[in-house]
Image 1 (cartoon, rainbow, N blue to C red):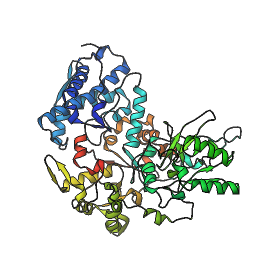
Image 2 (cartoon, rainbow, N blue to C red; image 1 turned 120 degrees about the vertical axis):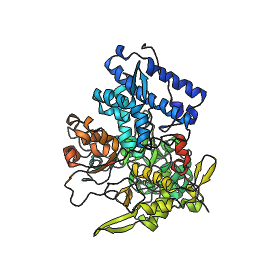
Image 3 (cartoon, helix red, strand yellow; image 1 turned 30 degrees about the vertical axis):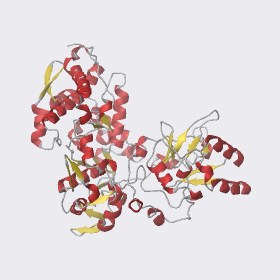
Image 4 (cartoon, rainbow, N blue to C red; image 1 turned 180 degrees about the vertical axis):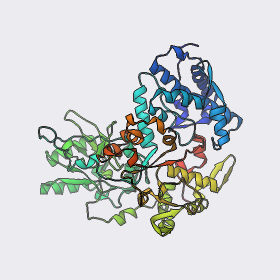
Length: 557
């Protein structure tokens, strides 16, 4: 035993938190994994300091799981995961592994060692290989990054990976409501200040249409191209319309007319119609056009941003609070300068079109484009199957039946499965697995949040239609939360000093943390629904087997 062993990065074998086992099974992958295993087996933990011990055991758990899964896959490469109780018992309890010179099972390492260290954030770092586990870590822990990484991982797991989904809400009052007409609330001394409002990565989480809930309006102002707006605003984080594009639209003519009238222009979100920018303010039209022309994109200053719906992420990306990508903040000597794509802020002025027209503006299947499974569900499936239903004299509005969804999925040619050397239609178990994935991410829920997805006559509701709702006789005053079963299994770790389970979740979830009403609530006020663990293998190979889940599906003509 020694303390001189170092971990090597396995990031090249990860794709969005999934392990690419095919690549890891190459000679290079096995060699790097062997180095990590040597670190686990031969590090002398008795010579480490307290924080080093926690880092070692957290890293060790993930490495042992990965090594064990590789051994299983060497015996059966088509292993689907820990899908039976017998498999889970053998993998986690029965089998022991060499850790720092001693043999221990994964079950004992987690429950007798790690949980006794008293930090509930560890559960966001442990990956047992299952689909619904937190993503496999992209950074190994050290005493220097321990706290930062556990904070980052906990936020990512709770907010971005959907371990906590808010469905029935007691209050809509959030911190963003305090921001009105581009100005923040008055600070001490009575002076109002204008400046960036920070946003979180969770804003840009996947929704029904890329990072947005629906496509842009069609038509857009100034003859902006719809397809460009859809690509840049809804399916993009880094790229932009080409420099000078805005000058080839009818915007310069509109600007000249407003300059003659000595009036600014209000710019609206191309998807949602929110007022986002108003310019020029505090400068002439000439100065605005000159600066924007020099940089290639419409350029706004702090006082020209209407901050109620505009957020700036840590990396400078400028977005709407509903997930529209707008552009980037590229400061210069004068201060913040927001370079914005015109196609993203070319929404029609209020009254220039109806919401009904906007929702019908884009049908990818008619243009030969790529249709993802969520779009198909919200259009074709919902049109025929979402309706008001009754059970035991109670009406459940806007819901569908689980069995009907399975019937629909197994008939779709777009969703054919590639398995080994054959291509086939989905089986009913395949369809149930897809539906459970969608339920786990909050795309839809059981109407009362009480069931996982089942191929039965149970009612489910899309989140856009209201999601799960509390029973009429429920006494809870707080939200209804759909949360990972991991929270149920380890609920004892979230002690009163953390504010209980809800207090811990609230600390990391912006929608809970920023609501003043939520600060007064405790576990007894919350309706929790624990969704079952999905034990299928979290791998790139299994993700690719059903192509539409990751890559979309071409419409079948």
